[in-house]
Amino acid sequence: MILTISSLLMMFANLMQQTKKIIQEKYLKNDSGNTTANPIAIEATDEQLDEKTHELKDQIYDIIRTIKDPEKPATLEDLSVVYENGVEVINQRNLKLYTVRIEFNPTVPHCSLATLIGLSIRIKVIRSILENVKLDIYIKEGAHTTEEEINKQINDKERVAAAMENPSLRDVVEKCIKEEE
Image (cartoon, rainbow, N blue to C red):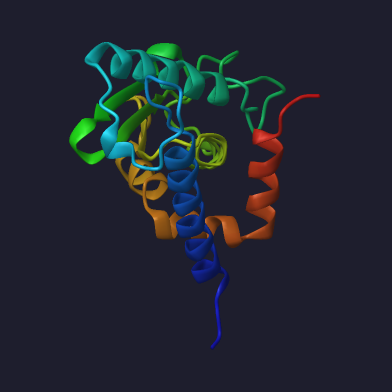
């Protein structure tokens, strides 16, 4: 059986999702402080869910604000490419899933690195959070000449996996998302 890098990445992504689910199930606690492996037995109040949604939004913004611009010696936050109100988190209670929508604003309408910025955002968020999320990343409406095409690219799992197979592109993404020490 010959496995391509793309299929290995997909297998790895599935393994990560399963691991997230196991961690969530294992460490969910009920009111008495006992750990339970049955998340259905725990009913969170609307207030607790809203607080968790707000915390997740703050966590995601903290993750993306430190991504470095591929061309300039500054972070995406410094350049106002990402901003707090550009992160939206919706709790899909019936699906036990959060929908995370991240909007970013390239510095110029013809930015040639907008796709790379979106890819860096996607990779860093996926690697950094444990919650089960559906991640949608978009360029701010009207902010780029090819926003529709770029939005499709950065939200297509196969294109993202193929991009990360390219060693040069992967190195650039890794440099952008690397945390300062």
